[in-house]
Amino acid sequence: MNSFARFVIKRILISFLIIFVIAVFIFSVMRIMPGDPVRVMLGSEADPAIVEKIREELNLNKPIIAQFVIWIEDMLKGDFGRSLILNQDIGEMIAIRLPVTLSLTIPALILATIFGIIVGILCATYRGKLIDQVLTVIVATANGLPVFWIGIVLMYLFGTILGWLPTIGYANPFEDFFGYIRKGILPMTVLSFRPFSLVARQVRTAMLEVLRQDYIRTEKAYGISHRRIKYRYALKNALIPVVTVLALEVRTVVGGSLIVEQIFSIGGMGRLIMTSVLSKDYLVIQALVLVTSLFVILCNLLLDISYGWIDPRIRLAEGK
Image (cartoon, rainbow, N blue to C red; front, side, top):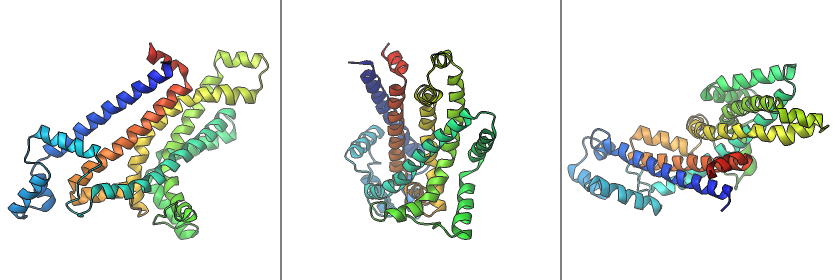
């Protein structure tokens, strides 16, 4: 087994361990909250007979270990239970809402990565010049602005004043692709602001550091073109810390979708979480937190694998 395969297997096992820890944490939090969760959901005036029936349906009358085992078994079967407030199957609710959120967050990360790398390269190439100074100010501003403020300003500018784009709603990309682009461009732009600024700053810093290395000067001495040095050698090594930034920003983008979906009235996971919290629908909250955590862990796993692929020294160190 080569070093890369060992590296991947180790990362997968670590991801499974993290998933188990998160599942224990979510389950524990829902059980240690003060008061009876069924009465919290149904109200203090609920019929005691109905409360007891619901407790039995939710297995709350069984030992805590048995409850956890049953919950894990149901999760593995794809059975998330049923919302007591909305009276809907939680799995079906997630199946409807999750693609909406993914169709916004994934393009936002891709856009942030592409434009962040381009801006970072420009800043590093023209360090100290006017283009570097202007782009650096833009990047710093994008990093400091709150998500909700950016969303409101873009809605007012492109929706109210210019009238170019719709400010609310969502279109399925498989049913109306152009409608999806028109309605999704603003929320995707808002979600991409922070990761874009961090990627751009990281690429600029990393490329400037790499370009000062001895092996880069040696390549210049051998007559290798500046373009080849910049894109084939310097950029590849500069992308290593960028992967780390993206791994951290996945959580930020997923969390930011909660605010963005509220601002643009999009029925995704973020809005469902907000609705469930306000209505105290703990079964839905429990399932949503678990699914969201699984998505973040999966993204981090893929980024970790790409990290090992970009830099062979990492997987070799893992093998040792």
